[in-house]
Image (cartoon, rainbow, N blue to C red; front, side, top):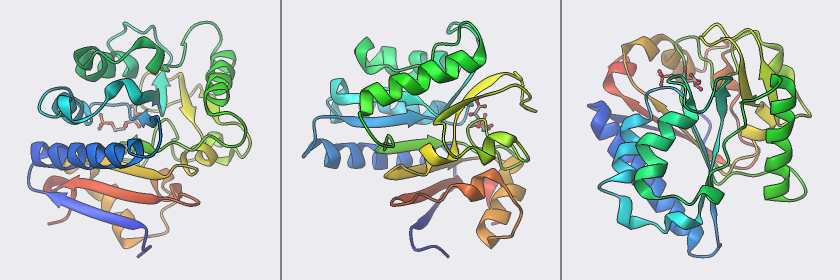
Length: 240
Ligand code: 6PG
């Protein structure tokens, strides 16, 4: 198995979230000891909610949150206050409780046309990171039962993107159908990629990952050029 791929299994979702939260704090603390900011791309979906809540409560005093900058790996193309919004979930569970300054919150604007919004989000990222391929310190990803990551779904043309950092997706099999997503070149430029996987529904996809079965899952295309991948999984998601 790839030496840069590390798997951590925990009995319960809460133990899993706590371990991943501690790893986040450790990584951010290490980066912030030598650099002025720590850049994060948050996952969508529901699994990260417990992790966010732990960071915003028990671990709130462990970091200088005004030096942490938050982006999203993907976003549903809905208004920011929509119940389906990944930004809204993170705002309510993490950003507002921590008092993260607005200038540290780099959520994609989901107004106008999806293609234009994708370009605006990409431009904002390039402006923030400067020249070259943006390299996030920490990218948090979930995984769907079909092995999708962010809003990169099996068979999607978005998986073939080699130039753009962000693209619009119009046919997501997971509702809502229209989304913005980071692409593989951007995701694979990260220093650290962390998957947070919980629940029996993920067992089949995760076992294919473990067996390194040639299943053409989007999650199997997450191979950072010069970084690490940690899988944080609960027992339910493993065959154990
Ligand atoms: C989304 C996410 C998506 C999610 C997985 C897992 O916007 O839905 O980006 O990739 O991370 O589908 O979702 P759950 O954590 O809800 O199982």
